[in-house]
Image (cartoon, rainbow, N blue to C red; front, top):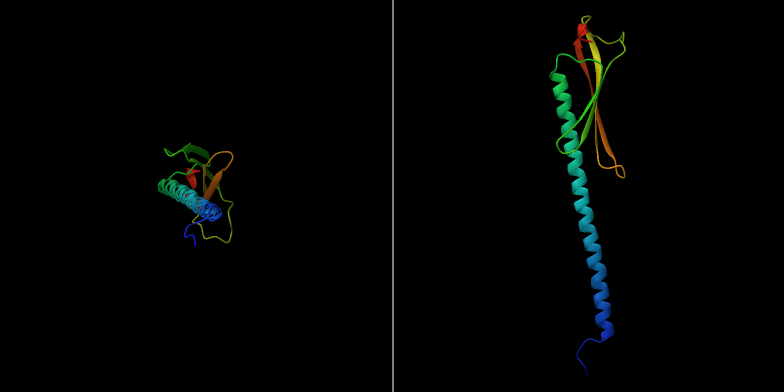
Length: 128
């Protein structure tokens, strides 16, 4: 009685090993890709929050659009628009509500990514 593996048994074992290793590598690379995407998204949210806090600290909010680029390549766009007066809102007469929207774009044209954060700011009416 022979106590070794036949060539067919060895080939089947290698085929099963190749399939299992291929699936493991695919899962590992997918996990790395998702980690990178989550990191980019978290950085974009931090950029947007930072841009909103800088704008909120400013006493002047002229209406309009401005844009720029962060050091990591992500792009930002800031839109400031006066909000239409709402008779139900309790806004002091000497103030005005401005809608502030920050959009962060990153990625390439094949896989564009974007987030938008917005807030309202109360500014003196003479700072339009």
